[in-house]
Image (tube, rainbow, N blue to C red; front, side):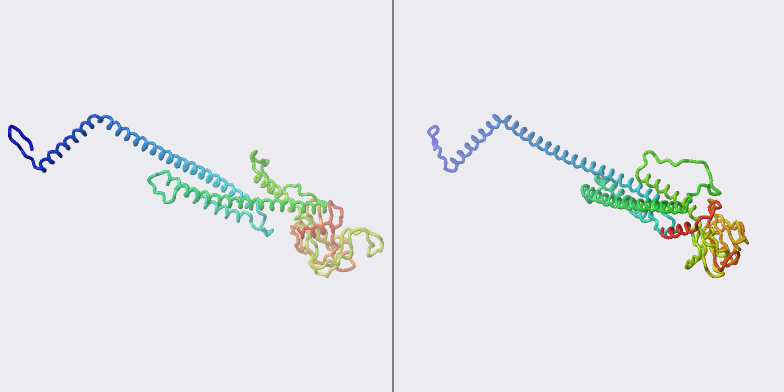
Length: 396
């Protein structure tokens, strides 16, 4: 209750507490407003500092993520380049092996020897390697494009793709290693085979007493151009050169051997009735020199040329009776005497094993047989020296 000018005003409880509450709210608002104005600058500065700290932390995190992405991309680029370089090396090696396979094919021995062409298997393997290499190259290009171009969706991660491609290249390298090993083994076998045959044929010619042909063949010629290997020639090229030289030697020796009288003049079982050298003459009973060997047989039995050559005599020749004489070159001639029939003529070329006449007993003879002679530069030599060489050649 309030008193003013003798008058009293009474307030109820509700009004009283309403006024009190209003006053308290106004006091609180005044305090808050005064505090805000008093500390306004400090609050704003704190909020700005907090925001700045958050911004710096965010930028640092973003920079770190960018650095990690850059490292990943760089590593992928390096891996891609390494895979590309490895692929290029594999392709170059595969090309070299293909060239070697072609060289091996050209070095293969003639089909008469019954040997397989060594280059065929390697060529097919090389072609397979080429196909695999081409597919690997295209895959490498696709993988590289995938992780370098962000517009291309990567189904498989670049690291996994590189690892898969690297594994395929490793398998391809292993396949090329096996091809190279087979090529080297084939080349070694070929070189050993040629050198062995050259030694054997040369030893046979030495036993006969004849060297390789020195005269040039008819119908050949041209300027002399010596064979020179490149300065940087590798082991494969040098070995190929040695094989070519050995094959040329073998061809030359075989041509010489082909004209040698090393085949038996008669077929079937040999019945030698008289050997080369001193013997008792069958007509006079006195010591005499027998210039050949005698093969006993039946009249009409085929008599064959013991080597390739040219007929220089075909007819009656004194004590030889009907005789054929063949010139084999190198000063070598063979004579076939006491024939009952002659089937060749002078000037005719005959091959080894060709029938030149039939066995008989013409001339100075005691019965059906072949008198066979071998002469070197006109002098009679023991034919068995050549026949033994022929027997050796049968085992080569």
